[in-house]
Image (cartoon, rainbow, N blue to C red):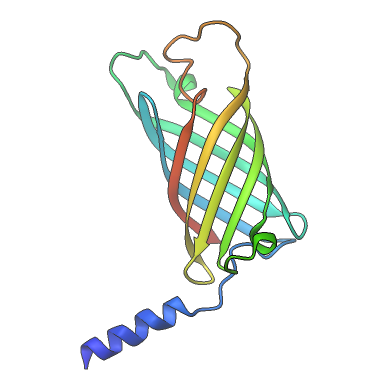
Length: 163
């Protein structure tokens, strides 16, 4: 009997009517891990829907673990970005619970782009992943090891919430 109740609960979660991006006035909060060469940290982001396929928001990453060979102070470990997303989940139409969102970001370290994907299991909870890369770094020439933090390809993975 316990197994039957558990199976029904799992199936009900799988068939909940959730949407990854609902358009105008949609609010998403995400928190996860950030992975990059010589450091790992925590990433938080917030996106607000301005139209059927447009959202804007911010993202911030703080590196908690930095390789010992790098002398990184607080400013080297922190990055804050304003971001713009083109939410294409309803255009690609794989599943209403799935959203893919390429975007641009303007941060403390560089101007860059990202490609994100999120999948919602329920109305309020999902998972996300983002690939980030800089297009233009603010400092030209050779960067110090601490300056390469946030100025390279990064990966974010974590939980996404509707608020």
